[in-house]
Length: 122
Image (cartoon, rainbow, N blue to C red; front, side):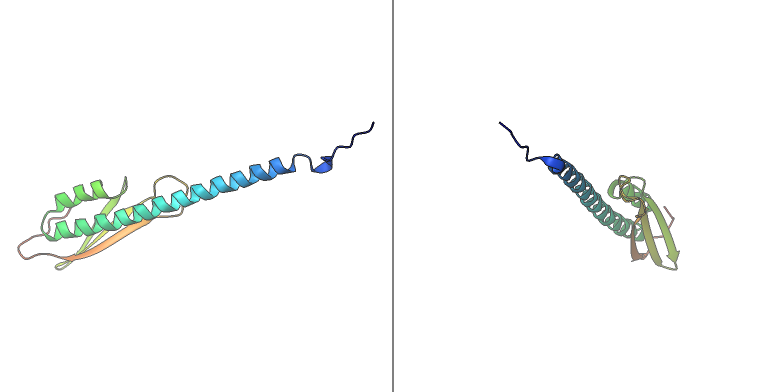
């Protein structure tokens, strides 16, 4: 009695294809999560810049620095530029994780000093 095997040269091909598909799916999910984290960080930079500009315009630069530390992503940097009564605030940060290395987060806001609120700098 002779038995024939149907596997032939394609034996194990389904396993390899499944491993490649699972690897590609893992990379895709990781990039989606990194993108979501970057978008969230960008929104946090914008919110921090807006809050800092409002506080500086009211004459409370020390609270502006504290607000940026609480709202913005970790290790965010605050810079303030004044021109007369106009204040431009910029908050910069790097995205969390190292999956998107060329990406830099930046949020800026503009405000005008309120009357009687001297700017002392952060």
